[in-house]
Length: 334
Ligand code: KG4
Ligand code: ZN
Image 1 (spheres, rainbow, N blue to C red):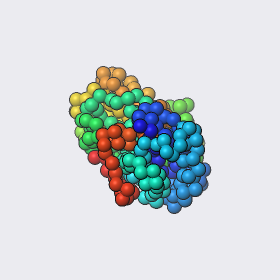
Image 2: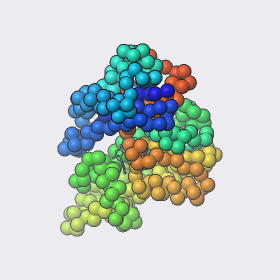
Image 3: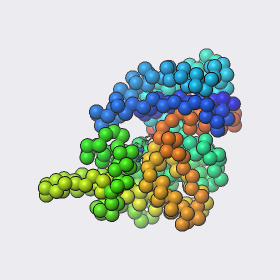
Image 4: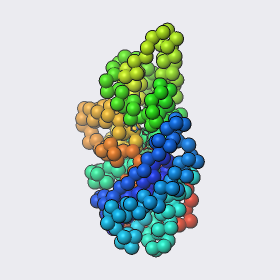
């Protein structure tokens, strides 16, 4: 079954063609970092407009790369939420038009489930039950997955998402947008123990996260150093901030796996591209005898191959979404 996947929930326009949820024939991504960079974050109206300009040529290019005629498609999958409504609508209108014109099975995909399926795309199905840690620009959550397509929320951030915190801290110290990869790079030559930043909600006994205090602590530290006439070592700052984020994430993820008595942990979302997070999770999983799965860095951040893959497994079960479906900015996973 050859599925067209479309993803426009935030600031990447992405189109993919995937066979049977596993063979990627094409996966194209047109990012908008340059467009939003000077504003220090994604501007929703600009994102929608850029999606609108990009989606048709990108669809043509993806089909050409996949050497696929529209008539050779067997299904269409598109992100319907969560995300920016105006941005989602562009991908959805395109996907619906293709499905309607060719009378193809149509499936709306939850963006977060898409991130989980980046793992399935690359490594096949994980054994159930498992615990998934989803961490991106908009989400930080731990989910228990007892069986395919069933998600139970264990905990999530009470304020900022981790990716958002990375981006805000990076912006504060003058790094380009998006800041996550910049902090990752800088941190590699910094000392993670240089500055003692707070580990909010560590040992709180639940699976919630809080990042706004850490962000404030970073700002306060930088201001205090500057006021004292000292130069801030950005590599040390990045490494110490990143370590504080990752410490809590590793602890809570391992705690959730233990509480739910699962033997597999799966990581999903853009922040999973983070070198230190991957490293620390791998160490902890090994120490705890857990199987750990995460996608390669390119598949961690937003793409349409993961949407086509997630859509395929629902379509294969006979599931269909009505073409009447609307975009849902706050669509929950669980
Ligand atoms: O999943 P994603 O592409 O989009 C959302 O669904 O939000 O995640 C984007 C987020 C951004 O905040 C970006 O800074 C962060 O993931 N990110 C990283 C890294 N690569 C991307 N954060 C830390 N380290 C990275 N290497
Ligand atoms: Zn995402």
